[in-house]
Amino acid sequence: MLFTRFALTFTAISLTSALPIRIPEQLRHSGLIQRADTVNVNDVLDGLSNNSTLPVIISPNDGGAPKVVIGGNPTEVPQGGSDKIVLAHFMIGNAFSYTKDLWKKDIQMAQDGGIDGFALNLGSDDWQPARLDDAYSAAQELNSDFKLCISFDMAVLPGNSASDAAALQGYINKYAKHPNQLLVDGKVFASTFSGEKSSFGHPTPQDGWNAEFKQPLEQAGTPVHFVPALFVAPEAISGDWSNTVDGLLTWNSAWPTDLTSQSQNVGGVVGALAAPVLNQVKDAIGSMDADTQFIGAVKGAGSKTYMAGVSPFFFTHYGPDTFNKNWLYVSDDHLYTSRWSTLIANRDKVDMVEIITWNDYGESSYIGEIGKDQPKSNAWVDGFDHTALIPLTKYYTTAFKTGQFPTIEKDSVVLSARPHTKAAQAADDGVGKPLNWELVQDRLWADFLLSGPATITLATADGNSQSWDVAAAGPGRFSIPLTVGGFISATVERDGKTVLTCKPEEYTFTDTPQTYNFNSFVAGCVAE
Image (cartoon, rainbow, N blue to C red; front, side, top):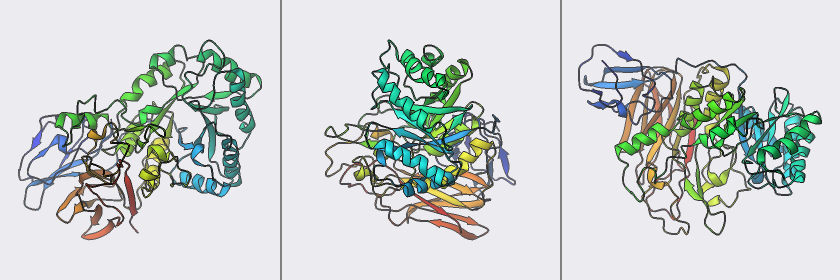
């Protein structure tokens, strides 16, 4: 029996024994696994990462018709050393009221997720240096090995003169000897958001960063390992920037940013997406396409550090009277775990990962607790906690850093869903629908970590549920349509007993929202 991407269909037959099938790497994404007499391959394989392998079994259903069973960890994880680092991007600008106790709480939560440190986004507010100092003090008082580094936000920090660069040098020098400062190759690790236009009074930004930032620090005995997030073409990294940077963070690799309503020609389309568009979405989710050229440029410019981005969501909804940002990047099809799986499958090419973000509430990308210092984002953030992603993160960070998937001791599930239909017309929203809203799907997305073979069931209403048999321990990604006025729930059954039930009572799905909210509600449950 041959597996082909587009044509293979399993028809109703009576099978006397299970048939294991190895999944080719090109079949790394999917939609639903159906309990049905006819199952198309494009509807079978859910969220498999590039180059990964999960067992798939075709076996008799209760009445003799076949069912598809999937489960187990990927069996092939490329090796690439054990010196991998995972950071989370922390917006100091959203921490105005932070005390050292709050910093300690966040640090400990991040450590629980297998995160090695925070990349502290430093902006231009005059109070931010004090919060930066609190972060370093809190990490030291915890007596932990949690690391910190500064990510200079050059979208707001000035970069026009030598004195602007001298201010950046001052921060590096201040924390260079701190026990919690992240060092790479014995050098102070420093990053940025943007900076490709910061010339510090020199003819080019490359000259400016070298002459006013890197070289003075080197001469003063405080060399930096400089891995900025620059928004430039790959050839610039291997060309003009090759003598300036020690690596690159590809910020936009965290989302399929090229996937837009315009690129897919679906502007204004209210209904379900056509199959070709859905295939484009599935192919984009978790892909390495945004990384490949940059990896080649980074590694071709002297074996520099490549840092990839990973993020759970992106939705921002500011009108012209504030920040004038109103768009989303497609975050369906298990974006977060699919991206992690892809990075794990390519860990021999990726040195570091940055989770984007810990606390950027305004862009809905946070995995940490919701703080009270939001940037006017309460309308789409309050009530939408994402911290259930932290235990899930631990599973993937462990595999990325060690090359081995950890043993799953307890069954767990993380559910995510948006609060209203994509076609809904808000009653009182002055901003309007976000760009790219047409590309989202009204579905419940469920990420399971299973300790052994089980039957899992998802439901979004009393009359809308679906079950799958999972053949082995490992991660499982499943999805079903949401139901207006319904709920979201998941159960895990094993040996005739229900071992896990997850039904968040606070969730509702409506088609009559007051305002638009394309943020995701997230809930997690762990078996006792």
